[in-house]
Length: 456
Image 1 (spheres, one colour):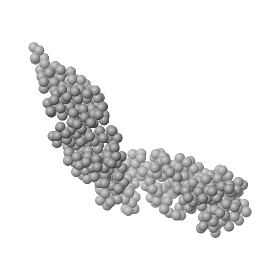
Image 2 (cartoon, one colour; image 1 turned 45 degrees about the vertical axis):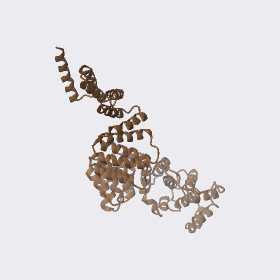
Image 3 (cartoon, one colour; image 1 turned 60 degrees about the horizontal axis):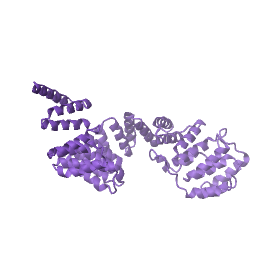
Image 4 (cartoon, helix red, strand yellow; image 1 turned 180 degrees about the vertical axis):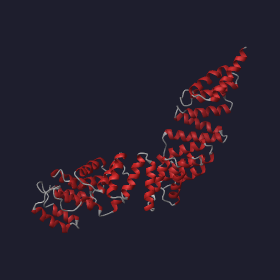
């Protein structure tokens, strides 16, 4: 053990916090409190009956250690002389605590484990180990260690709170909620635990409870503007878009909105058919500092597609242009195909079918199963009086499940226009079997009557 300590000391003062395999659920404010680690580890003595027993010689060592605690390096150097295979686990715990106090998680974890190898029921060591694992984003290990500490009798807000925090990172929202409620029993005013409880409720779609808790926190802490974003998420789940919009607009106008807030605001305006406001929100979203074209462009293309479907053609066109300028790399084929299809639809809506046709043909090249692009090409060639090409594209569209009913109707309409009523009838019937519509059923009945009269 003595030979290991100098190496661990060097490692400790140079190491960075371990990389996270799971994203932390939110930033804990308590990490900013320099006294928190000391509180979480506890005193530098021992707790009788539940921790390793101190002999007189151990107490003498602790008395010599206490004056050195203000200088961690000196304290660790001192302990290196006494920590060994047969030494009291309390000293391994002290080394771990010093590392933890100074933000050095890897060596801290090693020394807590060393203490626990000597004293498996050392509950403060389990708690300290759990804290080190939380700071290193080792969520599963933290849950096990903190659970063990609680099982051994530790009952306090920080232990339950960090257990809840780790459970939330593991997407175990129901368990996290229970742990947060336990933490708040001990620390009813803790913002960290209240914020965590809101997130755990949102994960479980308990939107009304989350919104009410946000109101409670905001009354006491109006400066915690991040709660407006959480509450907006709850309002959206409750389908109260007006209230969600109010919260998000406050964040946007105050310059405190994050990318997700702006995107969420744009999505609300899109859903409520307010294209100008949607365009404004999504433009701001694309211009934010942390641009992520790989994620942004597919969503913007979808928005432009929806705007064009709402006949908001100028807004769709402007947004599509912004998406193009944002993307500085080659897009995935499916995203490029969607972008081209929206562009073609806009061209056709503007009466520029000739310009749209080659774009749509490129879409079909990228995705031979894009029935929507084939339908648009069929429409273009039908408008251009090229019935051969129109028929060819509509027939290809009948091979795609999603577009088959509509493609059959278009083919039937072309046959009716050419006077081929008998050919149109089976197409209409098949379309109506696949996708029943009153208008199509009425057309079938009228056509059948007409054909019967003609045969008499």
